[in-house]
Image (cartoon, rainbow, N blue to C red; front, side, top):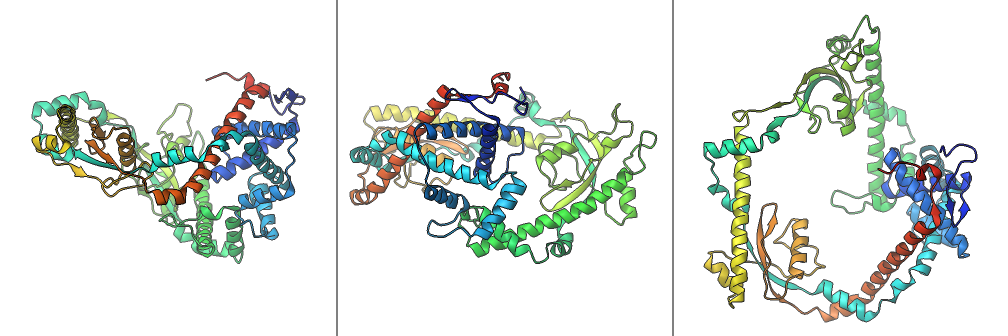
Length: 532
């Protein structure tokens, strides 16, 4: 059913039908929630589906606030508004900048009003009340329970590892001709060249349009930078190392970004003009040809370049554009029965990259084909040797893991079993579940895996062979050290507060999810939609 139709079914909450106005208001709150969560306004159908889910939650939230007679104070709503705008609690909101935020970000970009923002802030504050009410069970965790979990997460573990790096087995993997052919035949699909194209293009670099951008921006650049900074959280602006920028440094970056966007806009104007000129005087009787772009560009003193062959997945460094633009290029056609004008030879509009705007035409389509072993021999050799080295590392690791289990059962030490196999253990810096990193394991995923596997071992036991991207290892838990008691006493209050907060939110989310299932009926259009 069309939701915009008069008298449409917009669902119900707690048995009360949802009105058109309520549903529309909740949708607008859902849009703002999306903007605050992801930094942009929803644009795709998938994103709008997420907005709808949030909107329905806001409808239930509003009903629960009324059901439990929760009246949000202006002070609580103002506090939430400051959080949204990134204003410190002790500071007042600058009304001129807030007005710009309401007019430009909410109104012009989001299609929302000040009333929508105020209602959103009230509901956010109201949710905090509900969290406190229905998440109360989460606060019941005791100091003793918190101490147990603190010890669990912070008890240091002393381990040793025997490593089986793939690189150690690479010298043993030189293939015979027969082995290489067998490997190629089993993996032939991996060496198929996908459909590729070559395109002609005229580039309009952003850097050529800075002068026009500066003229267009005039003296308003500082004000615009202030508006952008105010509309975001200060934590959103960080340097390459992840450190938060000062307001001054952030605004320098914002101004440069605005300048770049404006320069790209100016470049696009010239690119659009070229596309319009290219499209002129063509119809079914005067179709496009591959020579049109080179000839037109030459008449205008513009340079036309041709890419190397490229596929849609890998793209080309010549034309740095988003994936959706690559999809446009791969929809170009040399001939199509329904395109007598041959307009599919050219992209219908300029393609915009990070620093260039491109006018593009198809030069050549290259169909997919299977490469012969002779063509890809070097790659096949590398792949074979890598695969074989991984296989040998795994065999050696699993063999050693079995020997360790047998040796430990006989009362031998981990080091002694390693020595019998001519393997030297790696001593690892002591770590706990709460340790962020250690020098010996630089890959974050590998380190988390090591933490979890070590934690699951009994003292004096070893793991099975654990594969990694560069080989694998067997780890032995030598001992568990005592927790630093003084440090624990110092950190335990904050740890307890953090646990209670997490448990409180979890308890509220469980209650709220249950309420959604019991008391919210979605609009008819969603109830009647097919289930995928």
